[in-house]
Structures are given as C-alpha cells and as structure tokens.
Image (cartoon, rainbow, N blue to C red):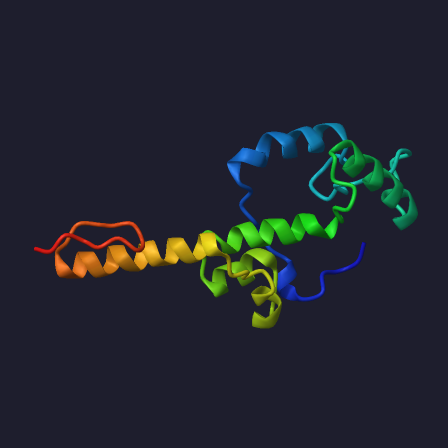
Length: 144
C-alpha cells in the first residue's frame, strides 16, 4: 500500500458507536496486529491481491444478499450518511479526506427526506424569531 492521494487523506476519523463492536471484532479476528497492521490480510497473512480480494468480497456480499454491492460502495454509503447529518462542507471534506470541494460534493445527494428536515429546521427558526411554537413542515403555526 502506498501513500494517500493527498495530505488530506492522512487523518483521524471518529467511528460511529453503533459500528464499533464490529470494527473491534474485525481487528481482533482478521486484521494484522499492531498500530501499523493491515486491516485486510490474505489467508496466509500477506496483503490481499486484487484477484483474491475480489473472490472473498464476492463471497461475503453474496452471503449478505447484496451481490451487486461494490467494496467502494462502503465508502460512498458512509460519506452519504455523514452528509445527511447536516455537517458543513468543510467538516465533510476533513472526514472524507478530500482536498477538493468537488470530490466532497459527490456525496451531497438531494433527497425528499433531507428536504423535509431542512424545511422543518427553517420552520423552527422562523417560528422562534416570530415567538411562535414549532410546527412540522407544511403546517401553519398558530398565530400569537
């Protein structure tokens, strides 16, 4: 494994608590030991080759019922979930290890669910300024 594409790729990232038990299990059972150990090693303890990793990945995703899920989709899913939290573009860039805004914007998908959260947040901000109670998006706040 070589260096990262940019200095932005060298970073510390906080892992969501819900996945920590799985990460610990993987580190204990499958990863190379030590702080510089590889996260993914072959059956004989050597780094994976692309072809052998592909076979193991296919077996794992078939077992999970996700035959078309690519390894890179893990990164895409994590970054998309991070973007839906309302993190700023700068925060997302730091978390993802992106040096360019263009790369980070790939994960900023517009969804109707997110649009509703934005509208709800706008409602709360407007109602607070007007001294009204909070409403859900599309509902009228009672007048004061």
